[in-house]
Amino acid sequence: MLLSPVRKWLAKFSPLGWRLVAATVAFSTAAALLATAFQLYIDYRHDLGQIEATFEQVGRSYLPTIGNALWATNRKELQIAVDGLAQLPDMRHVAVVENGKIWAQAGHSKSQNTRLRDYPLTHVHRGETIPIGRLKVVIDMDGVYQRLLEKFWVILITNGVKTFLVAGFMLWLFHWLVTRHLQRIAEFASCLNPGNLHERLTLDRPAHAHHRLDEFDRVLDGLSRMQFNLARAVETLEQDIVKLEQADAEIQQLNTALEQRVVERTAQLEAVNQELEAFSYSVSHDLRTPLRSIDGFSQALIEDYGERLDIVGHDYLNRVRRAAQRMGLLIDDLLRLARITRAEMKQVPVDLSAMALEVIEDLHKHKGYSEAPFRVQADLAAYGDPALLRIVMVNLLDNAWKYSSKIAQPRIEIGSVIQNGRTVYFVRDNGAGFDMAYVGKLFGAFQRLHHDEDFPGTGVGLATVKRIVHRHGGEIWAEGQPNAGAVFSFTLSN
Image (spheres, rainbow, N blue to C red):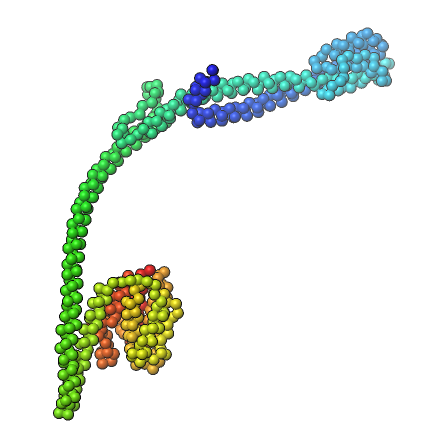
């Protein structure tokens, strides 16, 4: 029944206090053991000194009397002296021996822890010192050890009681001065919330006038400052939340308006696309018909009235036909460029090496290009729309051969390199090249850096290539020198 209240009383003390008590008990016990050992060592040395003093006393006070009694063979007086000697502290056995014969003795010598001292007995007769026997004195050390053991237990019990009393007092004092206040601070801090940040913590401590601030005063001051800062932060946060809610409402309104505008713009774009489709059809139908008429009637004039025309007339008609045919090619390229911009993309893995070889084979068949100049790197892998990438390869390879066709040993290379972690594809030739001062015009529609008489073309191919590369999320650029070839490089999104 008594254990339950004791356990409750002990439970109110914190683990920190118990650790302090444990450290105190351990240190005090170690110190007590060291002090006890030192004290016992001092007492042991003192008892040894007492034994040595007893031996000196025997030699100084008892030896002459015993020697005279033995010379006079007075056993009674000899026994009285031996019995008196045996009464000295820690004396175990005393014996007077002459030639192996014991004349007198007291006590017994059966002990393991003893100290023996053998004194020679002499008598001076006519100026001559005559040895007459020996006095054997045995002092028992068991008494010394027993006293030391008793002192050890007394010192140990006394220090143990004192240590545990001090530890208990320190436990209570630590609880009264520190632990209970820490528990109160912990409870107060755990209950803090935005609704009670203006409450202040007070500790049950006696007031002292003109006392210096201690650690708990600093903790309370720091806690108050923290509450003040938290209260300001909460107020600021509430204001920010209100602003965010207002901003969110505005964003919702803007999103609604934006969605409406997107719907409207989408409808407008669809209408524009329909108009562009109609325009493309109109261009394809309405412009091609008169161009075919111009080309056809020019050819009819040459065939039917060619004999009536001189050389200048034939030249004029041929120029009209070439202009009409060039105009037809421009219309075809414009329509192709418009379709590429609006075409739906389907991106899949593409083998550019195989595609380049197919394009080269088509160029061989339809334009009569030789097989020698083309060198295609193996395993050129890409990811994109196969149809659009084929248009890129057709335009780049066609241009490379066209601008290399007038040199003795043309060489065209298709490959790739890794730059800054990205794959860069390139088409390189050693043909006419171009001046880098005009590279900005290279990818513009109808922008040409060479005369049509030298290298025929419409100036739309590279613009088409640029749009396809940009639709794939990549970039395209060119480098070249006049009469030293050119290299066209492009990337695709990974």
